[in-house]
Amino acid sequence: MKNPKSKLVLSLALVSLIVLVGLFGFVASSKSTATAGADDEAAVRDVLMKSALSFEKNDVAMATKVWVNDESLTVFESGHANYGWADYRDHHLVPEMGEMKNTKYGFSDIRIHLAGETAWATFKYTISADVGETGKMRHVDGGGLGTAVLEQRNGRWQIVHWHSSAPRRTPAAAVTQ
Image 1 (tube, rainbow, N blue to C red):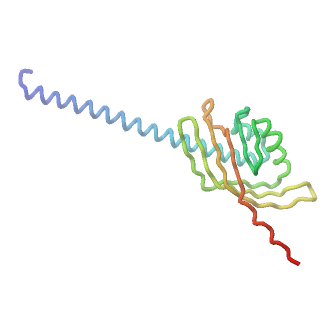
Image 2: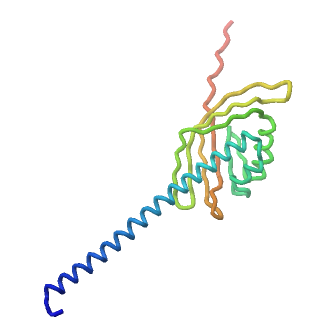
Image 3: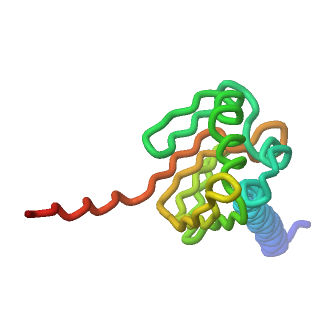
């Protein structure tokens, strides 16, 4: 090609092709990142819902699948702390499941945040159950706020930290005589 205009047209065509390929790669990468984020958010939400369902069904085996089963777990609830899966399972989860029947446990206003292989969620919870021993059952309804921290371990999300709290009860009115 001895014609300078032909060289210029060819150069511009080549530059345009490079820009288009780069733009296509960027768009494809952005879509896969957005899809991965949406998939992770859905997976985190699923873990939270399975945790609630395991509690409703008194199903420790199901809980074992969504909570980390090692000493890194921390649970803060009602001013009490559990450190490690065995402590939480044996001294909190199983006894509480044993006391509650006809349990309904749900979450609302779930807000999930992702940062690599870590996620945290804030939520509101409600709980309703019959509590006590047969013949001495009483019905309770409650609710509050919670935060869960999850890590992606071996390709699946697991709860590594849980903190929930109920609103303070209004003090009983003083009796005057």
